[in-house]
Length: 243
Image 1 (cartoon, rainbow, N blue to C red):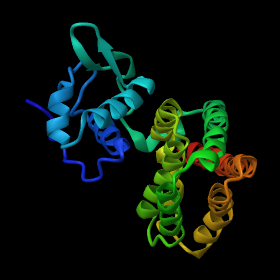
Image 2: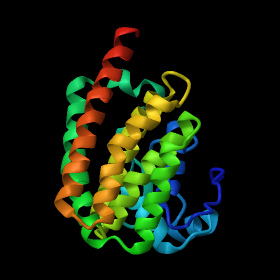
Image 3: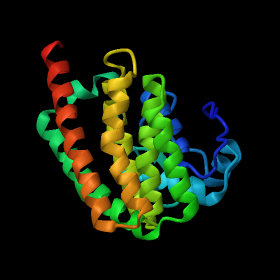
Image 4: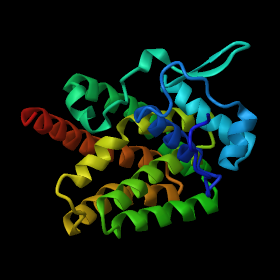
């Protein structure tokens, strides 16, 4: 019996499919060793095209959550049993060194996608990025802020016009998305202090991309990641201290 997939309304966002499948692995609907539906079946289940399914599957494969076996199909990776079993405890499971490694990967990937987006983003992508920024600074709750924050970074990667970089960033975002979410949710609200901080961190990135200034965009992303790294490590340390 196939899992209960939900149709994806926005077919331009394959990460929505990847996140649904990731959640199914986390909650046990899809277990290590389970065979996934075929590509045509996934296309029908999600109501999307072949390229969208392939991009979503690629991101999960790069994250090590699924694996393709020749002549057999695609399966949930056996080696990741339990890795996503309790997402709320990720900040307790990862050491400070693990977090530092994730941050270093983000520096390498996202500083480059920001620079390339400044060169290559279409006018539509620039407009959509501005809308996501507005949604982030005007968010009224942690969940909305998390979704806008995540989508902002993924769209920058998409605007780099490099499909491999886009997939790599998407995979990294799947790993660290919970840190963003739990940081916002820590106080149970999303207030003016959070909005001001997000304006200071995200507006320079947006403005550099809109102005088509690659090095400014690169530096703005690095500055943002520096700030993010500090609070990610602080949240992880605090959570472990109260474990």
